[in-house]
Length: 151
Figure 1: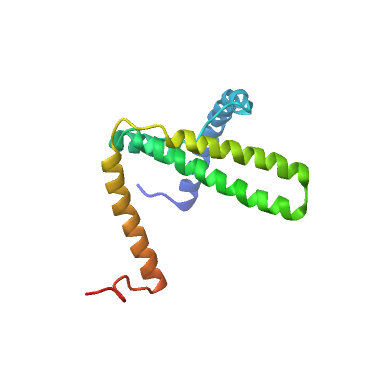
Figure 2 (figure 1 turned 45 degrees about the vertical axis):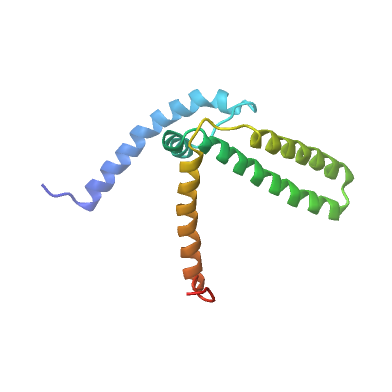
């Protein structure tokens, strides 16, 4: 059996059209929930990745991800605060300062929560992963990690 380009394209178009109505039904079912500003969600692939990290490293993965995410959010607020101070918008500066203070409090609170285990395994994984990432970055930039080191 041989397929022409037209028959394959027609088949793929039919599949897309069949899925389109199902996708619309799913989207309609989610619309109310996702329109709620109190709804919290993450992309499905991210959720699966986090679930895999939790399965392997325990709740230390969540603790570290939470601290990292709040830290990044704090950095964004710090940059915006600097910009607002430069522009002289006192009201926006005050609101941003308040948000920044809450983020800093959240960061402190989360950092004080311990995990049930996995810290040593998590840190060993990070050491290997980050070490490899640094090495690859150095190689891309043409740096030799042994240059200047005592050999």
